[in-house]
Image (cartoon, rainbow, N blue to C red; front, side):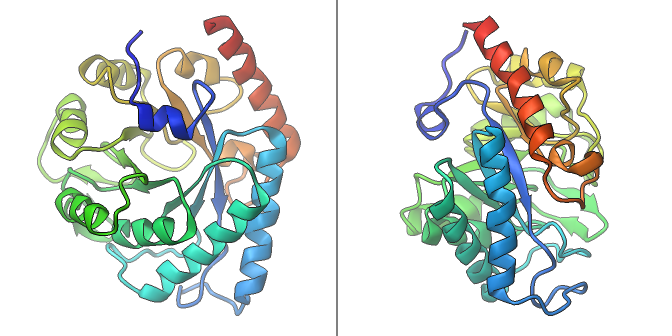
Length: 277
């Protein structure tokens, strides 16, 4: 078995870590914002994060999921400030790593929020690919982001980069293997994320196997569609998973977290970990 980078193993102490999604309500300035105060937003995020932690997940990813329709590359400093406040307060309540994702591709805002609030990682949806999305053509941000990481002295904030991200098409046809090599070796991602075509849709096992073959020393996580029923199949290959929809009541993405579903899922993960050991 190829050893994974020390930074990843320092953040996540358990093998095959499971990261639960904290989907924030619409934030101030978003089209669907309905006047919820910052305090109420924080309280809701902490409540959802606490349920995920109670269920046994290994990390949390805070995301402005309900700010759709998204801006391709958001630059509003107030958004970074809100994310930082939420991440800081969530981090005070749970004893597991917390990360940041600013949709659609607010990598610089996510990095700023993580650095300010003690976040351990960020997810970047468009890192080294150029993709066509419902927000238009989004160009990669790896060069700018890596320079910002150096400027902010944020080398301890890991970058999880999507490859062939959901809700998009590559602007130039590129195999997923080549895209993975670019993200890992040219962009310098600390981990890669594979998804299905949309939220809640499972990734291709064949593509996962292909990516692990060409980047064996880089962690590869599943970013959508992982359930208690298929987690064993995927974690035999993947190095972990980011789980949102399955952890919600009735498996509905917009619903609150269901602790019983989290516990059931994590028990299967623990059995798999024991079997690997």
